[in-house]
Each structure stands twice: as C-alpha cells, then as structure tokens.
Image (cartoon, rainbow, N blue to C red; front, side, top):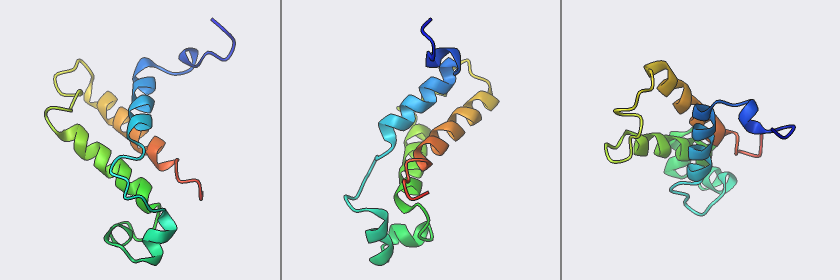
Length: 102
C-alpha cells in the first residue's frame, strides 16, 4: 500500500457513499447559484429557507432517487439498516459540504 492510500482509512461502504455523492452532487441543477436563488426568492430558496439552497435540493433529490425501486441498490442488499442509514448520511453530508460559502 502506498502511504496515504484512502482505502486504508475508509471502508468500502464509505467509499461507495462518497462516490454516489460525487455523481449526484449537482443533480437537477437549475443553472443558477445560491445567491441568485435567494435574491430571486425562488421556490427552492423558500423551501430551504435560503440556507445552502442548491445543496439541500441536490441532497434531497439524490435521496428521492435512491428511494425509487429501480435505483435503490440498498434494497435486497446484505447491509444492516444502520449501515444503510450511515451511508445515506454520508451521501447527504458529502453533498452538503459542496456549498463553498461555509
């Protein structure tokens, strides 16, 4: 193993969750930034109270997609419920951290 190899620090589940977050971090992006959404008082800005508007939307949309039977790779897996919860939390937190204003 090379020094700093991420697989030594993170579990396979953690890496999968981060990869899902990376794939979905801009899902359903409206083409505006958070400031525009807030200043234009868009529905998204209202729904998320002007707080990390797009990141909240991307995280919500990702979780909604993962609940669809055809995309829910958790269903029927050998993962414990706690592992699924943890992975979903990692996905959400990873997407939320893409808000560079924090």
